[in-house]
Structures are given as C-alpha cells and as structure tokens.
Image (cartoon, rainbow, N blue to C red; front, side, top):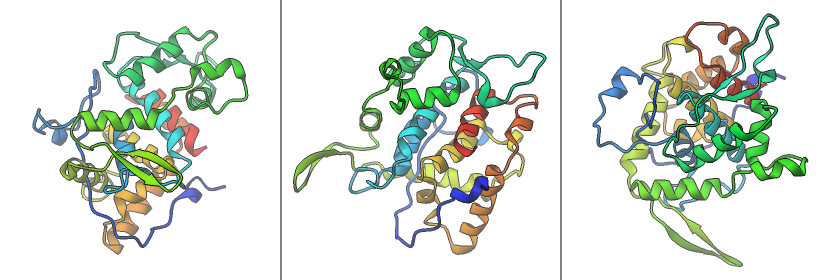
Length: 283
C-alpha cells in the first residue's frame, strides 16, 4: 500500500482560518530564524497542543467524533517532544544497522521539562526495563495494548489535559454543552490569532517557504506536518486554501510521506526519535 494512500481528500466545508504560535520550550533545538523573531511574549505551544488546536472546532470546542486517529497521534507528539528536548534517544545501531522501528527508546536525561504529560511519559520510559520501541510506547501511552501489565503506562485524559493547557494560555475557554443524554465539557476558541498563526505557518511550510529538502526544514515544523496528517487534522489547516494552492500543498505532503526515512536517519543532524515516530505512523 502506498504511504500516501491515507491522505484525506479535501472536505467542502467552510472553515475559519486559525493560527498559533509554536516554538515551545525547546532546550536544544535551534528554532527557525524567522520564528525566532517572534515576540517573546507570544503564546508558546507544544506539539501536542498544536495538534489538538488544529483538531478543535473553533465554536464548538471539541474534536470530531469521527476522528479516531488523534489519540495515538498525540502520544507520538509526546515522544517527539521528548526527543527534541534531548530527554530520550534511540539506542545506537552498532555494527548491524537496525531499522528505526526496531531500535529501543532510552532515557537520556530525566531533568523535568516543566510539562506534566512529558514528565509522566519520561518517568515511564526511564523506569521500564528492558527498553521498548517507539511503536510499543505509542501503544502503551494510548492504552492500546493487550498486555495488562502495560496498562499502567497509559496516559489518561490527554485531550482534556491539553485543552486545559490551552485555556491556561488564554487560547481557549471552558464551557458545558448538553448533548441530549449527557453534558460535555468543551473548549471553544477565544484567541483566534493564535490558531490563525499556526494555520499560516503550516500552510507556508509547504507553499511559500517550501525548501524541498527535509534536512533543511525546521524539525518541529516537519514533525507537525507528519503528526497532523497522522492525527487526521492537517486537512483543517489546508481547507482555507485556494484550489491551486491546495493541490500544491497536498502534492508536497505526499512527497514527505514517500521519503525513505531509513536513509534520512543516516544523515548528519537528524533526530532518530522523531524519524522513528514518523516511521511508526507511515509504515
């Protein structure tokens, strides 16, 4: 099956254009020069928060009931965040080069990140012996495992916890909505500027600022593109585009999906954890 076969077709639904801010706490990752010029007071979001924000309906304040991909996608974001912040790494390949998906995740530093979800996942990774692969950790953190001994690794209420982070950062608010048989807590958007900037950055990454070389792309943005696709929310960022720009954007996303990640992992300056997570979703 083609790696790009799962691309979502454009939905003919009018959506408001909404962006963000992005370069979260990033201990060792060099930010894109243009993004580094952003006002230091600008709201900073993690990859997980950005993915959730792309998935949230602006007025309703919840993700699509039909989206069953975002749960595992958010766990992938957590692993990438830990990799970009130099908290975890993949084991060395040794003489016999192993594939990205067969290499184990190791704790590189247990220094707190300042994010509760990241620190919770990091604690699980540090305490687990023998080490596990990225694919296994995505399953464990999502609670999608048949092994009852691994259920303790599940990160619970991730979407709700991330939504509360967005509320604390002034991006969303909290409301209660009645759905006939039950009440549900929702988080409608209150700062459209933040989401609009996020959408604009995602669009620009595959249009005006496209470099046609993943090695030259900001790792955080590259991760965002892949994980937004894996979480079935990338379409939300592309929906406002003109037909011509939409076709160009989707063509370039397909090019990214067709990359040989094992070859990319052999290049200098790559982040193996990031590539391994991406490989787990597009394999």
